[in-house]
Image 1 (cartoon, rainbow, N blue to C red):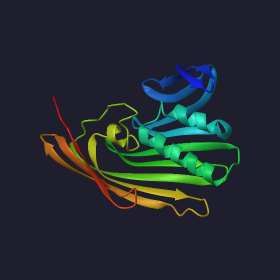
Image 2: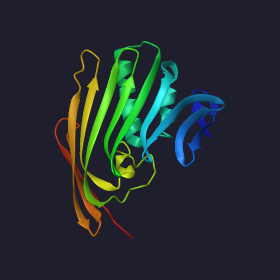
Image 3: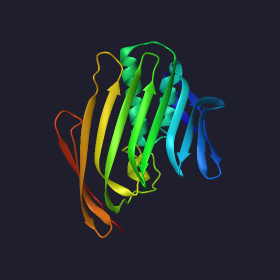
Image 4: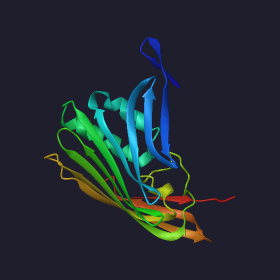
Length: 218
């Protein structure tokens, strides 16, 4: 549980997440604040892998709280996509109502080749489409299930090989927003089966920037 301080007093709140499985496959995750259900995710599997994550009928009056709840469940970039879409929606309208969020994952053997996040609001929809390319070397983060590590829709730890390119396309039905496309490239050097450096180039923020990561194995 957590404890928070507000204004001149102290308020306490507790939360927990319940997971349900069908044999070894996760099919439901429910987030509770005390005894009150805040939000629920359902999972669909295909060929032994998660192919869809769905959130339905999320009351927008409590959406801000529900968004924060999802940070405890979703990979980092899936959560970031959802948070961005919610903030975009608030900037366009104050209409209250329910929303549905659907993540769809397409696999190429042991790698995620495509991840689509669709947010259906009362006023329209927003969609992030992420397509991936990979090398043939082993991904050192494969199977490392930490929300902080899943920067690229979880593809970077759900996939067996290393991402070499991500193409992200944002689409929306809102009138004055035409959407955009971004391409990120990853260049590696290797020793044996694993990468030892990675140079990441992106153009998200008007112009291009490059970061370099070094891997150390013990």
